[in-house]
Image (cartoon, rainbow, N blue to C red; front, top):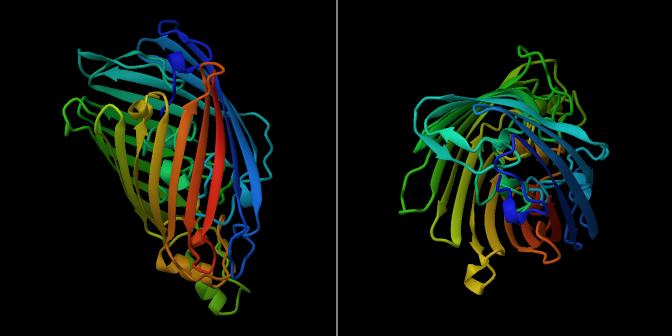
Length: 432
């Protein structure tokens, strides 16, 4: 993620001490006016005017055990709520919102990992410290091994333009590939191992991770015979524009878990065995869900960058971990305030189109419920989103940032019978 360090934090952080200690707070307020809805269901985005606020605070700790070994331990608290109890939208407008409203704001362990660096070349590169890595000198060609608890999207599908709700976009399907149903508990974390080969112009990473026992669940399935996830990403860093960063990432994943099948759920309903299609009405079974993604970013000059993402998953088995998206396309960019003599300001805009598989559409149209969606019926249309934000430092002290954000969502929950809806928001971010 695009973390701010140095002069952008309340307290300065050393580049030489063998340990790291920092914290952040991210506070998001959102509101939407009443919007048109021909009908609503149990998991609908509320068409009446409403407001919600979320807060995420994180304590980052790191320890350099040797020049090639480090440990990270982060504690987090996530409180408040999202609009409509975080239901009714595939591209939900606040990535910080807790997807299980019954969870409180009690602190929990978010990350706990060891990283071992194996040198494969004698030449080295200098890198900046971040809350997630305090090593400053790395071999140009190396093997990184991470073992422990982590967020898969700290390593996969990263994008310096659209990746971080602290200073960038806020929508779920802008900051991540919506079709990447990555392994995680409801807070977004999992246990596993990552092997990452890095060279100057390219890299390849693989992760084996645990999946939750149930969709959007808090408990991970520890028996790998019943559930597991494999994640693959090939990254190229070609020099398309001289002295400007370029990255292209090709992603694939396979998830094996106790997932329901939309076709099976529909057949049981049509046979009169269930009152509505129920995706979780099945015997214990280990099924496969897989998908692919592409992610690109390009720096054009000292103040303008662009990004694009696209993703697809097979859509026959239930959405399990992240959100209810089977296909997605997103693109946009950001501009630094250098153009208007405010170099620390940033303006960004993004456009997203999300879609569902034929079976997933049919399941929702017959009254089925997913872990996020369910209007009781469906007049299908792709979910179309535009988001723009303006981020700026607050002059009271270094490390304080404000932002205004607005999102326009057409066909919320893929339903042409509802919406469109406009979601304005504000953000306060503090880097300690």
